[in-house]
Length: 110
Image (cartoon, rainbow, N blue to C red; front, side, top):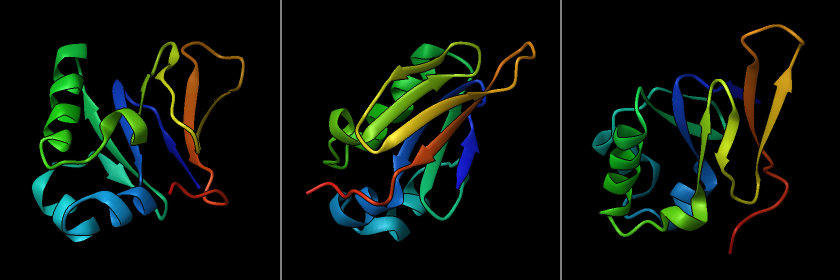
């Protein structure tokens, strides 16, 4: 299942939140304003680099390892920060490009 990259987006796998975020998915959803999610990924959205960094930092304030688990992408250029198990693909030949994030749920963090 995929999510579109919109503006500046941070993506986090739900399996990583469930395993490593204090209080799991329920706490995460309560504490952070989410842009969208699907069965596998959460997406946080911002309009500026400083704002997306602030959102990611706020996730890290709860002890979650954002360097290990959070991927960041821009809707124009694609991935800015990659992490294992979150893949980015560009679809079509149109401008502006359409970038998608996909969770590779077959492999899990330990």
